[in-house]
Picture 1 (cartoon, helix red, strand yellow):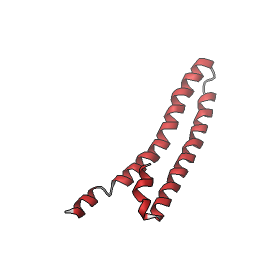
Picture 2: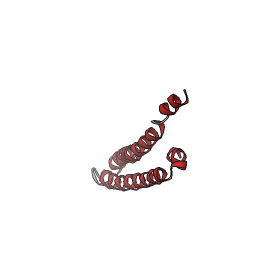
Picture 3: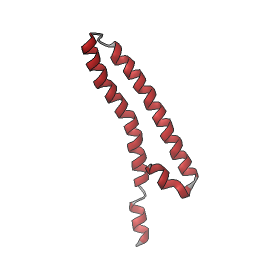
Picture 4: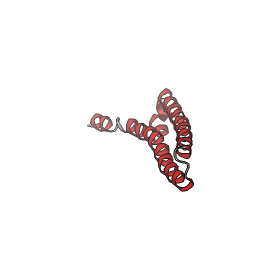
Length: 88
């Protein structure tokens, strides 16, 4: 009986990691899209602000993904902290 419950929850750390990494990809890009387009309309500088913010969002995304990946790899190397580090 106890084995069935542990199998049900074994996917949760992977799901949390997937959601964190997906958030690091989607949120900065969507924010740069919204802010960049509105600032380009306001200052009449059609693609310049949008492209600059998209480049910054790409760099922010990469830094966030690397940090989360390193944290997850550290958690996999130390099994006693595995679930706690990935959920944070």
